[in-house]
Length: 321
Image (tube, rainbow, N blue to C red; front, side, top):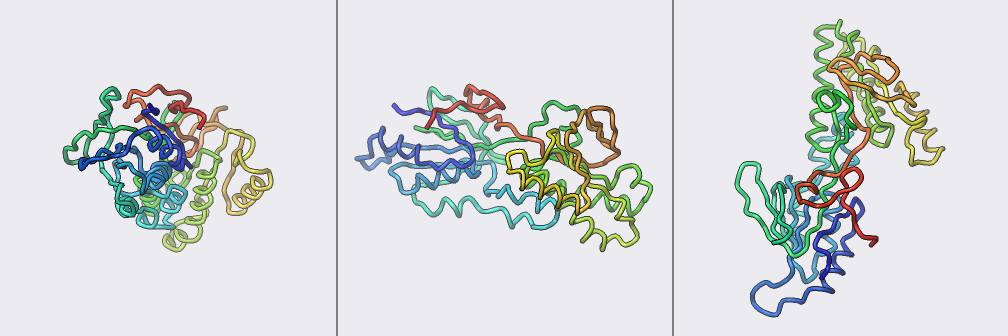
């Protein structure tokens, strides 16, 4: 019998599941739908790729996600900095799965599973949802923010991993400008200081876009406010930004950020976050009302809810293929 549970990260194409399912389970020969039922948890890049890879195969596929839309994560920073509207990066899942007659969608949150009976326990946001049974389960639930246990990050930081995060950050930035416009003394207290932690692609993009928003749009909107007093700091624990990239790309990113006025702090780590300041390892305290946390993610804890053994960063161990 084929494996009962699969877990694939971003970039998963679904062909491995198609091969396992079609090679190991007999096809239906009667009127009852005896096709094997594949349930996919997560409508992100991996889940959708798996679903579309199984489109048209002799299987029945149910895609489960708590949202009925797919978010294009690479552009979340544009929503957070008012460059795009939420609708510009959200795509209806039903419209995607509707291309294949053997695919269907169920909007629900996975709260557990009984792997022995192959039953998935679901919960709706405002309504009851029936459990569903499966022959094969694909776990592609994505990731969640990893705070690494740093005090105050969970309470005061602004992650950026979904549309709720992006809209919350955008509204907070605008609220800080409104507050400073009404009470200029707040500028010295950190109201217009924005600390972005994490020198990967997300952190670099947020820092650059935030600086552009401040000096091109908000400068025009807040004529009585000293917008030049606003600061954007990018904090990275490594000695360079964009660690996986080539040196030329790193240097170009650093040069561009500095030209835009971003204060880049490499070789720096956050020790503690409070509502009105960020404390770095070494003792430096930066008055700031905003900390954007782009320092890393970990696997979605749904794997734990499913009773699956997990490894580093909560990931489920998979086979080589």
